[in-house]
Image (cartoon, rainbow, N blue to C red; front, side, top):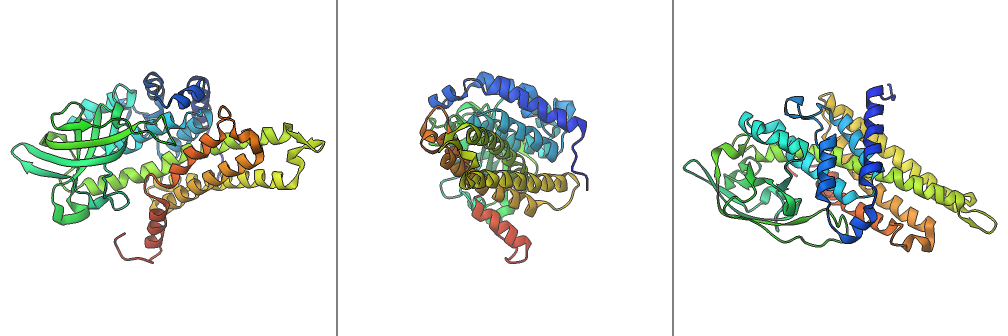
Length: 386
């Protein structure tokens, strides 16, 4: 088993880290305090390559597998403190660009993919509803077939990127009696009659990653805007969540490494009782635990992505890695605050904000309770349905 990365992978990571650190990280504290997303920086990051991932070079992509995509996103998380901006980019890639690339018609890909991967267009994934979160396939939104297409009605909530989106990938039931097999996916342009995007809803975490409600009222969708076949929306959504759980989780591994570096440096220079606090066993043990968590997360995620790239069954591996990374990211945030003591409350230092930004990792892309259910099902401890 070879754990060594290729020269191309090393350069990929280092180049992405340099861009994130030199271009995206400066003035991050100010942007986070103002709770605003910088669209110019978003587009620069997209143009650099953070949303190109596995897309074919025909459409401007980088043709990367899951592991290389995760490495690039990990470098983004380590290099930039602006996790909100990074999260917005990753949601655009994993929940919008990748499903369109993997399942969209030739006509849809020819029209929309290149602007999406170069950052000219921003996309949002509209799936979650007031009564359909973890139980996503109980959604109430419907797309009734009509002459030439569908009539869409429904309400979506917590939609990342909605306030800034040019395109929406929306999920709705075309056959409500068929459950998972009755959901279809559609591509909808901003400004389409019947599409309403709500005001930005303030958040305590990922505060400069915008989200809002999205409402569809008698919205006509041409047949040509259907992604995949009728009834394929459940499978498309499931596939996009595999990518999102795997690659988006890498963002939090990068953030964990940055936090470890910051905490380690502080433990070496901060002196109490005549010596560096890192020389006290209670402090050093916390930092060692942070290091152990980081390396465990890396190994589990890299293995999961490798299995996915090899065409092997990887759903349980990706669920376990997402579960581990999110739990450990929160615990390491708490340990960093404990190590810094009262200094951790300083707003400019950003440790409390960092912790708040880690907490959603336990919820998005399927809560950790759902990830445990996925693993339980794979172990034969459940029936065939979640």
